[in-house]
Amino acid sequence: MQKFVAWILSSFSLPGLNSSAQAMLSDAEIQAILQRRVDQEKQSPGIVVGMIDDRGSHVIAYGKLKTDLLNSAEATSVDGNTIFEIGSITKVFTALALVQLAEQDQLRFKDPISKFLPDSVKAPSYEGQAISLQALASHSSSLPRLPDNLAPEDIQNPYADYSIEQLYDFLDRYQLTRKMGSSYEYSNLGAGLLGHLLSRQTGKDYETLISDQITQPLQMQDTRIQLTSSQQTRFATGHNQLGQSVAYWDLPTLAGAGALRSTVNDLLKFLAANLELQPSPVNASLQKTHVVQLKTDEQNLAIALGWHILNQKNQAIICHSGGTGGFRSFIGFIKDKRRGIVVLSNSENDIDDLGLHLLDRRIPLAQRKPPKTAIAVDSNILATYMGRYELNPNFILTITEQQGKLYVQATGQEKFELFAATETEFFLTVVEAEITFLKNSTDQVDRLILNQNGRKLPALKMR
Image 1 (tube, rainbow, N blue to C red):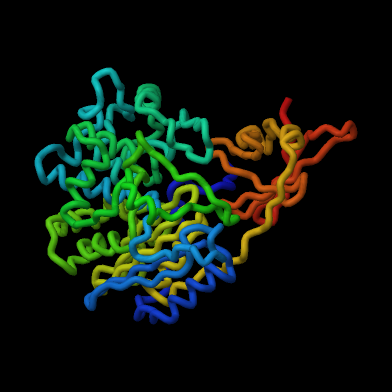
Image 2 (tube, rainbow, N blue to C red):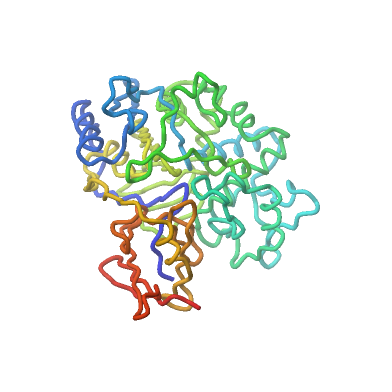
């Protein structure tokens, strides 16, 4: 199958390591990188970096809470207390909660998920083997990345209306295609389901569960889902890759996959616990989440409980990245160096390379270009592009129009917005790809060209 879009909530495509870790960059060097990313490369309105090691922690920040205010004297600068959506970093908290509840004898890692579902719900299995809680935490459950009945009413907030009833309906009818634990497949569904099951077991909503088990013991007061009025004033506005403001994301049913918001200062406390730089009630539990569970198909990449582990020449970087519609996040550390990094940005542009470069300066920064400029196209013109276009029988692009915006969805993938360079030429921001719509001799749109990776792929409009 041809793929041309990235994962929702996390696009875990970290570059490989090529050396042992070097000394951290100086504050001046980091400040220069952030300034370039914000001012010259236009990658984000604001980026905040947190660094921690044996000597302590500190924060370096550059930019603003919102693009619209960048040139205003009233613009608020981002800092260590600015709140961001952290997306899939939430999964690490979900996995830690699993470890803690097992330590408290409320459940066991190997428990089948059916034990925590209503009796009326049939849990998927394969050749009689049930999915375990541990498999959900290590992305080895054989569940897909997303449920096939995720059909958001508002594509700008795609998880908001996905209900528990829909989740149960999916589980009832889904058939696993391979043995649990046989391979790694990153699954937002699996992590979200794990959070839901832990909530059912404890009788607490996901936010309360994480607060009781993790954030209150670590005094992470700004790591939560529902923000107070005071916290709202510090909540950055999210932006797409073109610098346009976008909606926040809500994940009521699949909260364990990516619902948390946090600050760099809070996540530095979380890093301190992972590195055991300071005593806390959760330090010992966190060490269990670092244990490798499964290797992946990617060279030098393994999965622990919640965390990913990059290995090269006996050096391990334990890390996770996250992303929602308008935010990107990275958290990572090297245990034997007792060194950790947090990077939070209020743009969907990728920052993984920055996080890794700050951990090991020999891991190169990616080359970034300012975003393309999009134009507005009349909705009547957009309507003529709607339809299904076949690249091959197993790969179909579905073009839809919603609220004056054009979207594309490939077979088995998510729906993403198309931005207009001209009235007929459109581009994606999640990957380097363009789509051009073409007309026949009767002035009817009958085909498109997908331009990606140097290839121009024609697709006829299906009747």
